[in-house]
Length: 441
Image (cartoon, rainbow, N blue to C red; front, side, top):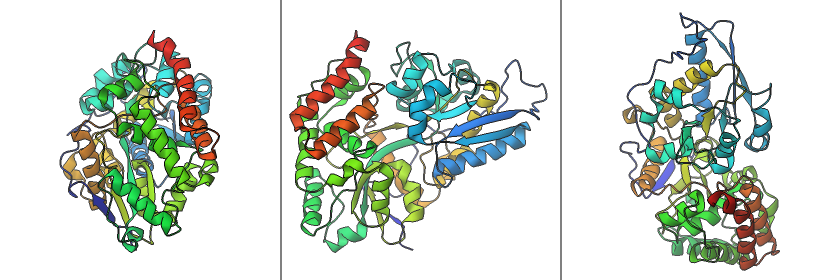
């Protein structure tokens, strides 16, 4: 089977994980007023919700955490799996209802976890952070996404979640298709465009894309980041200054996408394609490049058998979409908050974090020496490159509660030809400022 990763741009053997490592973890005693003195929670049930695939790195790790939790507490776990999109649209009502899970995975950022924190739908975890020492296990760039102020803006205030893995976005490529065209892994944006032109001339659409869901928005954001600095990221994400929507960052991103669409590098059919559709195109060897997140990595390793998988950081940039991964949150209507904290702490143990890493994920609290798999080391090496240049820059849809849908709709219009680049930028500015202008005040 040809699924060994070719990793470009980082040492294959990763050094210390830059997310923040831990040699030990709390033994998981909740200490809450309702906790039994002997730690035996027999007869109790903890409802856990997440949206990870069973064979994904996170799914594998959380299943093992559930086994340990049940062994150590005597309680049972009622595992409820859902879809990312379904929970994104239902969480505000679900977490404030009698059907709320006791602990749930949820998306981080101002528009998601921040919004729920601001309206009181998820619980503050400040006391649990102090008790279990989770803050000592998280690097500052990761902890940023776990804290929210009274307006739901990340980076300060109380802790409302525990990031349970790291993630970032990079370029997956079909090394066999590249070799057939006499191409090497791109080392510059000029290389990316030259490769795209070569494939297009050969009758192959270069990029697997989805404009219906997140991939195209993340590519647009990466192009903007390649022209940006940290001050621009802070303005866009943290509202420190107004964003110039006709400035060089956004203009380069939108105009470059439009050029690539016109050149056939991005198929018009992407307007109706989901992220899953785009990922399957790449898995099936139909398209040579897919710019997307580390959450695909484990699946690609297990499902790609027809070609050699290549991975590389996007070239010609210091900044990259990424952050701590999705978080464990405790809904306001959780019936078992003490057990929820015990479960969260088990997922932060080095053995669980190492399993996550060995399975293709990015752990936030692993002992590096526990991770020996070459593919895992390749992914960690790429991620360390980004962290060493302080490159994590969050995601394009974070600034407003509705910006995920807004950005997708505008980029669909760009692909369809309904918007010129200037019109697309003006529409995005209107959506963005309709929310941010009030928060900035």
